Amino acid sequence: MVGWDYGLSAYYFVTICTKDRICFFGEIRNKQMKLSPIGQIVYDEIQKTELMRSDKLEQFVVMPNHVHLIVHITKNNVETHCMRLDCLEYKNIFGPQRNNLASIIRGLKGATTSRVNAEYGNGYFSWQSRYHEHIIRDELEFGRIQKYIQENPEKWEEDELFINL
Image (cartoon, rainbow, N blue to C red; front, side, top):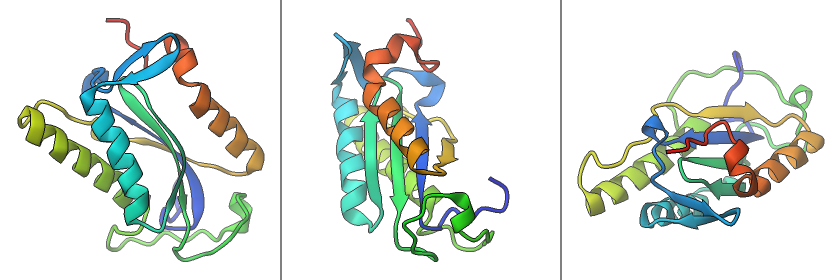
């Protein structure tokens, strides 16, 4: 969002896809995600991300070709328990890109890519260059997104990121 400082304490819904939406992370069987070895690396690195930072990963799911996360940035600039945008001040700060949403995603992508390339060879795996983010505005929206993440494996064939190969 224009004018938004992505280092602010807030909840963010993030989707990160593999390059060309290749299903590196596993497959859906009986409406449940079965992780491949690369999917397990991604899962492990997501869990490590929270251990290394003060920020929280409220919910996540690894799907065959993408990952959904709810990231709660907790310690930067503004401390609030309000999830509405009108509770937070807008302030666009261009400076070092650390302690913000982009640095979290960059760290996660870098760590997973390094581990996969070390095991499978350079160039074997790649993430899409960008990611989708959405600022979660209130508790109702948080609940709706949380449910979407939980049910994502069950609804894989309806997902716009599903590619029937």
